[in-house]
Length: 333
Ligand code: ATP
Ligand code: FE
Image 1 (cartoon, rainbow, N blue to C red):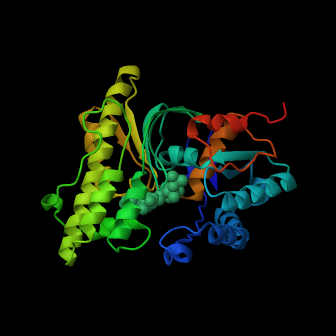
Image 2 (cartoon, rainbow, N blue to C red):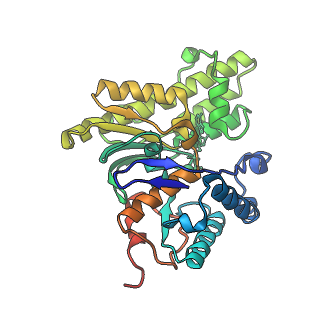
């Protein structure tokens, strides 16, 4: 639960996350049917804990935000259905939130952030550079042409036998490693756009993983992979900053999404932003990977703007961020 003042100060009153990692770890990735069932089993308890934790009864709510997509639709339908039930029962406005819009505003949970800003969204399923002019008002400057950065972390970690989810495991393995002995491919060098590509790196690193014999070998390879991913994120962001700086005087670069929890990635991106004269911001660590607070904040920002949803707002398996405003417009005018 989040409180948002009219001048944009956000306070997290509670943010309950039930992680399903243990349910899926044995399968090396998310199993859709298990994910949907777990949502059904957990949602009552999660909502109750959020209400108790915030210390505010249902009478203290101004609106109900629920994720409406994109993502595995089984889980999305459970949360959206629950949100609609609460909204109907209490006569509250419903705000159907795009999950990626939650990531996009997540840095505002730790600091006051004024729009507009340049955003690098790096998560398990997305790797995009976006111009964020305001809530529901974003355009994409570049995206990955194959894998997302988080996906690259996960798949390479899996090939190295490091477990799931791969990003944090690979970061830990890289401690004490020296990746300089590995020559990993660099994608899209010299390209004038802001796109990303990680499949070449994934193939090369997965092949090298088969040659690792000692813990030191694995630490060195993990360090090489982490540096290569951070370097590409930096190179493409640097391009985007150059373009962005021609249009905007307010130079702020924000990174968000699960991969923003990686310390090397944060450090490298901060240096890149510094060199371009951009202020740098990343969400507090707890709000990089998926969480409730970022969805509540996106909902609260929408509510302030009057962008509420119809009660029959659909769950959307696919929902590009630059179309996020559409769902706020009444379905039946
Ligand atoms: P999306 O938001 O695109 O739908 P998602 O919700 O699954 O995808 P997030 O929860 O934002 O993704 O982030 C999870 C991803 O972040 C995983 O790929 C995970 O490996 C990666 N990740 C988390 N922590 C770290 C870390 N410390 N270093 C690198 N990657 C990390
Ligand atoms: Fe996410």
